[in-house]
Amino acid sequence: MSKRDDLPFETTLQVRDTCLCLHLQRAARAAARRFDAALRPLGLTNGQFSLLMSLNRPDPASIGQLSALLAMDRTTLTANLKPLERRGLVGVSIDNIDKRTRRLVLLPAGQALLMAAVPIWRQTHTEFERLLVESAPNRLRADLRALS
Image 1 (cartoon, rainbow, N blue to C red):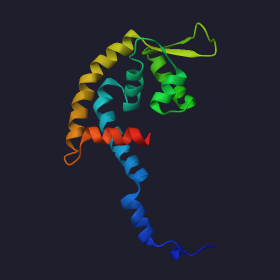
Image 2 (cartoon, rainbow, N blue to C red):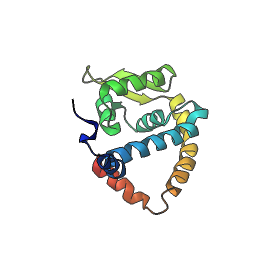
Image 3 (spheres, helix red, strand yellow):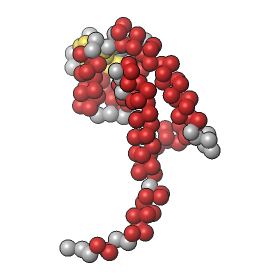
Image 4 (cartoon, rainbow, N blue to C red):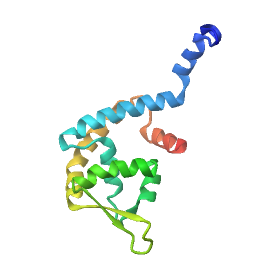
């Protein structure tokens, strides 16, 4: 059994102050809470908004395409789709060519909900960007894309 002082407290402080993963996680949680609160009146979470928005496309997406876009494993994506499907916001069908592939489509109710959500998202997003007073939001987006 190791002694408590084997790892200096200074290391804990170093990780707290410099760990990019920790800072990204904290920022992501804060952003999620802010957007969840803003979208709550519509019965949406920020994750559901992102999922629905990713389906706003000319052709139905496959689960594989969406899981790659949202950086989500297929099992998690499928679990997140179920409540949206039950609400009649998303439709799931079998691909005409490859019967193993499921295609996802935004249904009219989902489109209407997105149309109501976008102004809320825009306002919240503008307020969120204003918090970056000493940063360049476009640079931050580019840096985050580089990390993903």
